[in-house]
Image (cartoon, rainbow, N blue to C red):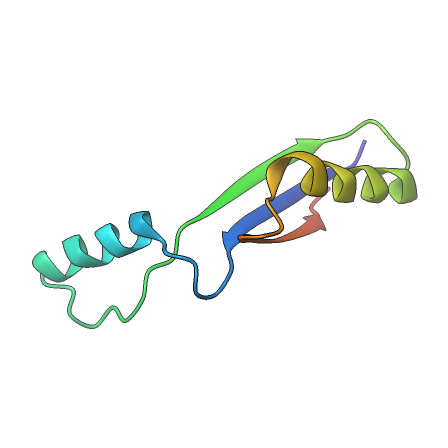
Length: 80
């Protein structure tokens, strides 16, 4: 069974409050060399299907559930 890693991130220009708050805290802690922090979600999906069907299903999962195309980018890769 293939396992896929799916990354969901905000599109450029979309406000990322979690990333911004982390950046502020890092600066307060003295990490002045950090230039940008972006948050993202990472999913691991173990799917019972052949390689071609699994990739088609992963794409469908991203489009129908995990990513909002108005604000998110997504990518995936087979890890096993």
